Amino acid sequence: MILIRFMITPNRLEKGDTVGIVSTARKISKKELKPVLQLLERWGLKAVLGKTIGAEENQFAGSDELRASDFQQMLDDPNIKAIWCARGGYGTVRIIDKLDFSAFKKNSKWIVGYSDVTVLHSHIHNFGIETLHAQMCLEIENKTEEARESIRKVLFGEEYSIEMKWTDSFAPFGILKGELVGGNLSVLYSLIGSNSEMKTDGKILFIEDLDEMLYHVDRMMMNLKRSGYLKNLKGLIIGGMTEMKDNKVYFGKTAEEIIADLAKEYEYPVILNFPAGHIADNRALIMGREVELKIADNQITLKF
Image (cartoon, rainbow, N blue to C red):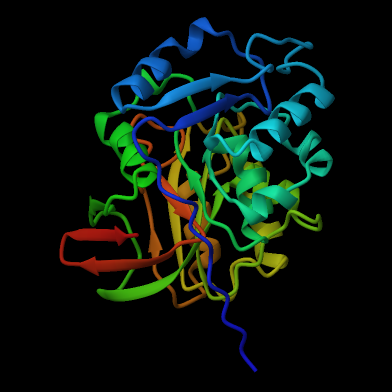
């Protein structure tokens, strides 16, 4: 018997609603958040800064206990309609097991962020709740207008799709549908075998990464393949593989070539250079959403 699971979409925001801003990982100052606070104001939204903003313990935004309690408070507060993570780095995995999602499961809200926040995307996906893979608060002013607008459209429940030119992809023309999952490759790799690991069978997997050695990309992808992540996908979407590094003795392939080569034995489409990840045009992706991927002459469209 096949069990069909319907993902829960958090309530859309209305003007006047409040967005909580916290840091689950690296430290950040209130001054660095001025552009995003101005952006939220233009959208007609209020902002509440968590106790982690301005907090500091070495590289982290305060201790593990502070970061966990700050996020927990935002999860439980019914007046907070969305939680926007201030920045990434590293640290979310250190607090994930300290969090109680009981209230969140009953009254879900959008969790927004990417990179290190992939921990939350993967963990919450197992609850059957959608999350928003999108630009952090930090440096939102340096991203494209399309990237900023994509976040607003999802938060306010507007129709949303991403279109890109058909280049350097290995995909036959056609339309396929599937649940979108994934995030940062390094984080997904680190979650394998944990309670936060997600299942990918029958889904469309998105991956991106930043500042990795090419041999390490190969190592991580080999682990995903051997762990069954790639075998039964409906499709694979590769976003920004940004600022990759190599040894003096060259690995011999780009990150995109490494990933595409490992997936070529499967028959599903592989999309390269998708506009999401550690790039200026970091479009929002609704994780857990049943999406439609249309591959046509000179154009690829991802409809949410």
